[in-house]
Structures are given as C-alpha cells and as structure tokens.
Image (cartoon, one colour):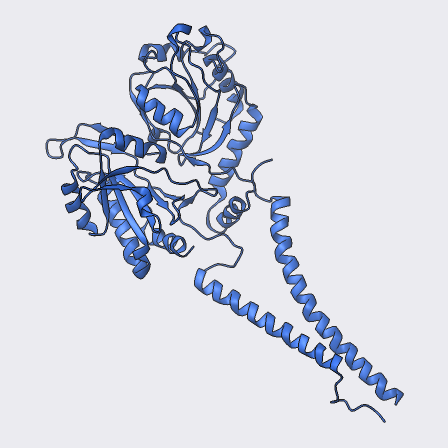
Length: 246
Length: 218
C-alpha cells in the first residue's frame, strides 16, 4: 500500500512538473519577448535621430547671384540657419552672422570627406540683395574663424521666405520694423537636414554645442552607411522604439 | 488496497486539463504566429520591411485645396480613407514625370483589389499649360482613376513647399518649350491623412506596391 501510494505520488509529481514545465515555457516566452523589447529600449544597441519632417523645398538666389535650390543639398548634410545682414547692427540680434561663422569654425574638425555644408537664409529678403549676401559671405580665411565647410547665403522674395522659413522650418520671425532701424525679431535656430532632405535635428539656441552637432552628424552617417539589408531592420526597429539620443 | 493507476482524483484531472490547455495554447500561438508570418512576411513585433523612407512619428499631411481635372475644387482631406500617393510634376515633363507615373501605375496594378484603397494624385507645377482638360487627358493615359490637380502658381507653391518640393521654370528647346525643374519625390499619405513615406526618384513600382499593401491593411 505504501509502495502503491508512493508510485502514485511520484506520478503526480512528474505530471505536475510537466505541467509546470508547460507554464514555464509560456512564461519564459512572454518574458523573453517583453525582455527583448525592454532591453532594446534600455540598452539601445542602435541609436538614431528621428526623421522629423521633410525639409521645405525652395529656389532662392545665393551670394553669387545664382539660383540655389533645396535639391542642390541632396546627398549632403546641411545645417540651416536664419538671420539677416544688418542683424549685428540692431539690438538685440538673436543670431549674428559671426556667431554662425564661429560655429562653422568649431565644426572644422569634421573630416573633409563628410559632405557637410552651411546654408543661411535671409529673414529680410527685401534688403538682403545679392550684394548684401556677398558681404555676409565674408572671407574668414586667415582669421580665427577660418573653415573649409561650404557656406551658402540665400535670399528669396518675402512670400517664399515666409513659406520656407515660417511654414517649412517653422521658425518664428517678424516683419522688419522700420521704426527700429529695420530690426527683425526672430528666434535663433539651427536645423540639421540629412542627405535625403529630411529634418533630423533642431537646435533652438544661438550657441549650440558643437559636440552635440558632431554626434548627430555621426548618427546620421552611421545610419546611412550601415542600414542596408538585414542591418536596416535593426535601424528601423530603433526608429520604431524611438531609440533617440538622450 | 492500492489505488489503480487509471483512477484519477479531481485534482489530478484538473492538472491534466491544465496541461492540455497549455499545450493547446502553445499550438494556437504557434499557428497564429505562422499565419502572421505568411500574411505579413515578418515576425510580430518586428518593424515592417518598408522600401520607402519612413517618418516614424508622422504628422498630419499639410492640407491644400486645388482644382481637379474635372474643374471642381478638391482638398487633400477629401481623400481620407485612401492611401494617397502624392507627386508634383507636369504634363510637358519630358522624362522624370512619365517615368514616375509609369512606376506608380505598375505599383497600383501589382496591388490588384487593394488598389481601390489607393489614390494617385499629381499636382501640376506648370499651371500655365496644365489646364484641367490637359491634365484629364494626361492622367487618363496612365489610369483614368488618377487625379490631376492645378491652381495658381501661389497656391501650388504653398502646397509644394511643406513637402520639400521646389520648382523652377527655365528655358528649354523650341521643341519642348520651357521646362520646369522640380523635386521628383513621391509621398505616401496613409488613410488617416498622415505623411508616412517618401520615395526617391527611381523607386521601383513593385517596391512601392509592397509598402502600399502594408499601408492599406495597417
């Protein structure tokens, strides 16, 4: 009797273990799936910059009197900025040309094979004629603001500027105030656009950290250079799980 | 008296039932995952393999109202409920526009029945020559269901700029007349009106069709 009872208990125990094993498998599966998603978010094996929105299309005149378009920037990384020629002469000037030039100089360590270019769009297009743009395009070579990064100055008509800067880049700026010497009030903003014409980062300050911009440029380049084939799934997962830099 | 092996207690029967339920659950789960993989070509929780450039946190596509090929006004929001493939081109375009529209035609043909939930829209960036009548004839050459839109230059400029599209008129040859340089990207807007994907010039119709199938059934 004792032997029979013992055998039955053993049988029960075995079946219980099997049953428990079935549950364990399901739990393990669920934990593995949830764990993988959480781990991807926490560990962030891949970090990407968000694809924010398309950079607006434009066809403006540059400092050489030529038409320069948004398509000319395809295949390059572009750091857009916004100001006007007489900004420094008016107080307050949220972002002067020299400040943009200083940032361009600070980013001078970026390898020359990285196709980074600066584009500055005038917020006072009626006044900033080609001559004014050419003056803005000061030759910094030989100064402490020297840089090899290409820099284009653009001006269009008022309506198109409003569409592109106000509507597309969503930068606030006022009409020139004649009673204040033609001062234009605006918010300082830099916008990083990728090689496909998509806005990837915005810096809402007159003096962004060059290291931050360099990091963001590296993230875009890593994604562009490594997201082919199966690796692309990893990058798309990083976008899906919002693995953006902290 | 020893307890016969086949004699089961209620507790034991419950445990057995639980085990069978677990096994059945696992089989159902595996079957669901297998069906999902066959239907979607990917594992659940995996991001879709999209061929276009995806905007991960999409915003509502900028609305505009222009004149359709029937002469009636049409807003982008009127097309809610359909996946919209939006393109900016013109009927006198010698190369990029017919090539792109031919790929879009290939995409909608590949979709079969799902194509009913897709609407191809071309906004003319040459309003001077592209009247509604001209657009109607041109679009019908590719597919009569395709919509052509036109308007004033200012209206078209306001519609194109937020999508990253520029256009600029320049001289052509006596045979072509003036030409219009323009951005050749195609945009995919989902059924809820969110801008989801971009296709650079030259994307194959089959690749676009694969993404559309996902967007239509999303």
